[in-house]
Length: 311
Image (cartoon, rainbow, N blue to C red; front, side):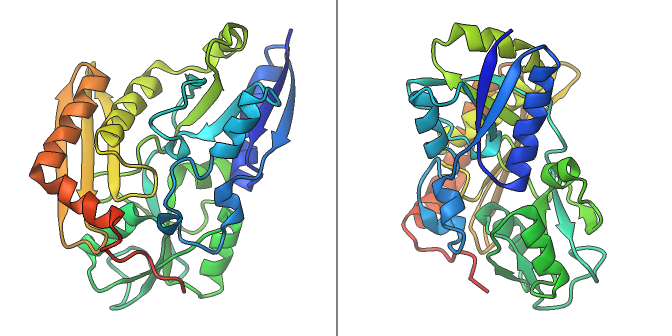
């Protein structure tokens, strides 16, 4: 049996994820330690993610620890992991996926539609902001950062009329009491890889890879590969207004994708089916680029479009 060291962020959700993988490995007879690593994204808690302007904002320092052999594997929310890994790393496993959808949380309102004119909704995601504004242009979006508990506390204290979060994180932490509405994929397409965990190792570490094979879920691997291929084709990271969700239906992959202006005035959606996850993701990404996705993303990267305001 092996002694393994897991690298993880220190947030409540990240530690839940690391402990979940640790428990599964311990059940196989291995000894596991968790090393908490503070990332750039954890340090810049007062800045909207879209303003950080760097890929790997939640993964860079963990990869450095992996490369220096201070840890043997890293557990990431797959949506935080850049689509192009460094040449020294690989994804050894993609775990069985949780609910990939976004949810609307509120104290006093049953749905997004029930919010009053001009209500304040918390989100630091341009992807969520864009699709929310397309649905309700009158709403005001304010940035909200911090761990799940912090965000829920801000909601309960009245700083926001509602907030948008990932269903997966709330489900994993058992903090579902303020979920008022699970938002359909067609209304708010999730981030690529949302709901899945990616287990990263050093490339060529055959021994560790072999120990992790049992964690790799074929369906999650195929669908997230498709979503990440689309994201890569569009040149985007986890802080840009791009959504992608793939599902397997009767043996075929169906991909839903979106590129949108952060103010919601232009939303491009594309849905296609295919058999090859990589090819499908690239084809849909190219289709969105041709339809105007390139122009939208150039505006975002150039800073010409509004980011979520700080409250």
